[in-house]
Every structure is written in C-alpha cells, then in structure tokens.
Length: 146
Image 1: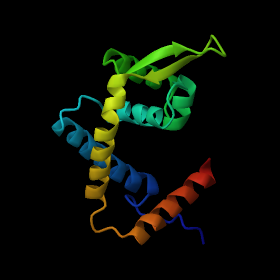
Image 2: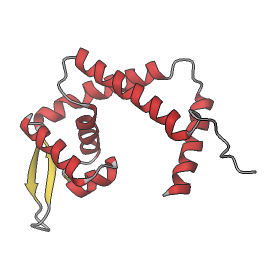
Image 3: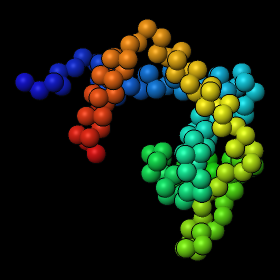
Image 4: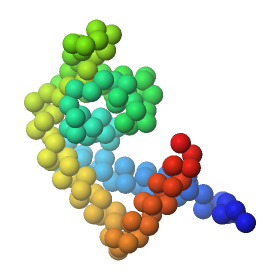
C-alpha cells in the first residue's frame, strides 16, 4: 500500500511550508531587531555569494530555486543598498557576474550568527537523531521528484 494516504494538513508541502514560513518570519524579525535592513530573500542571495563570490544571475537562480525576474529584482535592490555590484564577465560579454561589496562582506558574520541563533530557537527540544531523520526523508522526497 502506498504511503500517500494523508489527511488534509498532513501533506509534506503543508508541514514543511508551515515550518519554513515560521523560521523565515523569525529570522526576518531577528534581522530587524539587530538593525539589519535586509530581507530573507536578499540574505539568501548574499549567503550564496559568501560561499562563492561573483556568480552569474543564472547560477543564483539555480542555487536559490528562483526565476530570473525574481533574481533580477533582488539583485537590483541589493545594488541600491550597495551590497552587490554587477561586473561584466571576462569570458562571456553576455553574462554579468554579481559580486559582493565591502559592505556585504561586513554583514556576513553578524547575519550568519543571527541565522544560527534562529535555527537554535527553532530546534529547541528536537534531537540530532530527529533532525537527521527529517533531513533524510525530505532528501528522498526531493530526489524522487527532481
């Protein structure tokens, strides 16, 4: 018998969506309380750039699972805040790379600390074994559907 006999509200997408939304709201609140004027979406772009600076917009689309118009809007706003700059690729003139500014580099440690604090708040009373089990199940679901 398949494992898909769910009652309403027990679907993976509902459960993971609720948890994801709760974590995002708390992280946004924690950023605001720390005086940081960035959104969770902007932070996700910065996070990937901190891992590997100067990425193309397409690479950022792939890493964040967002479409091109969304990435363009996020990058435009990050540019206005002087956190990123677009630089023409030396290998391909059609491609603009998105690179971090000094101001963005200065945000890295503080925002990562706040993100870790937020995850610690979210995972109170959740064991390492439960975390690993949940990650394993979600990875299997993702692999089944990709």
